Length: 104
Image (cartoon, rainbow, N blue to C red; front, side, top):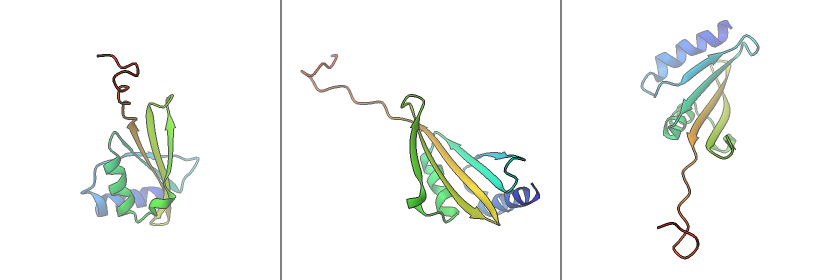
């Protein structure tokens, strides 16, 4: 996990101005850092841009019976696989238009 820890220190030194993500390290994937951001897809985008990860590589999914949007992408930084994940609640749907079952 030395490479991941070294990359984490380098991330902090270079990108300390960005919103702080949750950081996960795992001995199962010793050359991977998982950075997750919650309730702020703008922070996800700031990190994606800073890490120079192609926006076309971002995968969008929905989980929690449609209640949570998830963005995920992988990139490379300092020789380590960076898994960047963003979570945000799915916006509430608008009430149906009047006459179509909307409650007043």
